[in-house]
Image 1 (cartoon, helix red, strand yellow):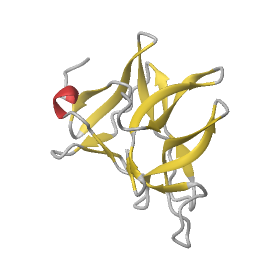
Image 2 (tube, one colour; image 1 turned 135 degrees about the horizontal axis):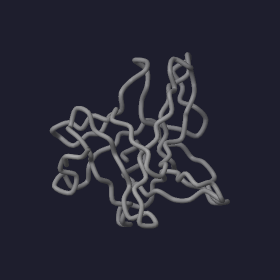
Image 3 (cartoon, helix red, strand yellow; image 1 turned 60 degrees about the horizontal axis):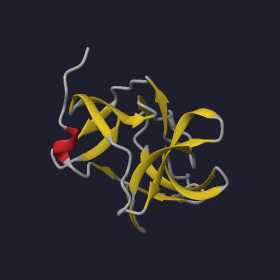
Length: 152
């Protein structure tokens, strides 16, 4: 995840007793959670693997046309969403439900600690980002590690 304040490696972590995971950014020298691409670069699902030996699919909430909203990206066991697009340059996008949808990096508390989380949302009608958030982009760190696979 790249933000105006730097680059962060993405990691899926538990949030209390919730069975779903939260996608947080950490220092780039820290290893992020392994992510695999399932499908084609134009219709892909993304999953974190080796999280308790299970696959956790990325969950991106529908921000729609709501102004000034940021919905944290999560990961759910055995979930599959084929709405991701991977460009030749390795940038990762999600299908838009409104032209204003974008990746955001937001300061949030997870397990009592401050983290920068990956979120999906929209700027406010005044052009400001939701509180504690800034623009973010998501890109593969190693294209060879995310080569498309065939799956049923």
